[in-house]
Image 1 (cartoon, one colour):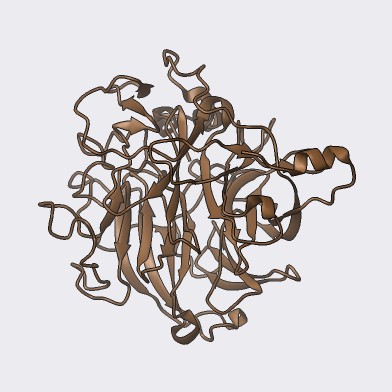
Image 2: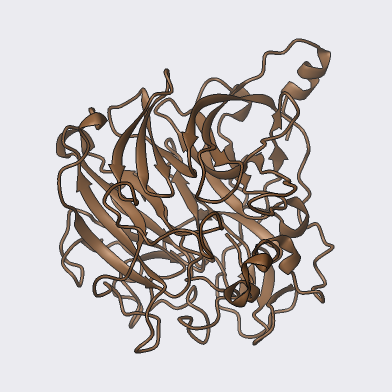
Length: 485
């Protein structure tokens, strides 16, 4: 989720260091600052294993009308239909090396190394039961003209293209029959580096498809393929944005999707992409809509100091790279960027701060956005946003691990105030014991956490686990079971 410039030139032996928290600039005054201490209590839960044998599961998605099933996105390229009662996994679509072989080869520095590319997003059409249409976000070799002007200099090839595609199931409700031959490519986006892909897809309550994109990779939103002020603040490029498109329309430049007239920059900004719904994101890896209120929440991965959760509104500017969380950010020329309380230059108007943030250096590594809990198994979590962190400190593929964490906040209406973060306490040792890669939510509003032990898109130790109540057997459990925030 995060890299420094060292990664782009480092040998394999330095990869773990480059992707770990040690990449902070040594002069950074905020390295020893804990911006938002996380409360270390409740509620006490258990993690029920639902399925195993996956590689790197990163999202669980419901298809309309399929209440007992969750579709799991596995980064190397397979979408699995998971029967929640039995744990049976059925391959639904395989775009990886064991199937259609559409993806860029994974492993940034070879097999068993870290990568942020792959099969990253999945969304089912609101009318999936009748039309069988669903959509994926994949990282592929460059194999066609981009749908937007490339951010790369002329003659410079992209690392890969992120591709939004439409597929059709053979028979909705019967995933064992797979998908119809062929796909419709809605958009191809040139990507400068291997990382900061964003990659999530979700249909909003308005029936439109929302797409999260990172700012293109590297560090500090700088370097080849990044404009002089970065990509996230540049309304002429699709990187560092939440895009909103109409999959039923055809009025886009390439004719493969529609541009809603209610998008904020359809006519108000000269040169602005009309697909943009919100901007100023670094790497909005996971996002979700509250199934009751329709609010959109995003976990935006930070640079060196702050991980943040944003409530996204139409036309909102969420600050990167002018800000990192509630602090300002100085990209610092050719040296490592750093957080600061003083603006390094001109500040755009009406920047929107996160609703919650925590300290990267002490509390985690990369925020993983989740869901607002709407289930019944854990009444203490009702109406709270459940999310997590990839890993407090991660060295891969072996060595000591300080595994991921699970959090929750109450995303109240208080404008300009940060919501306190509480950590879920896990029975049986109080540890996730996984690198947290993503979350899922079933048709009943229950939440699932997904991850693996290695943190890389290789192996067979990927699992899906359900958040469930801990059976209280003593006074200590009762004390931890009540959540008071």
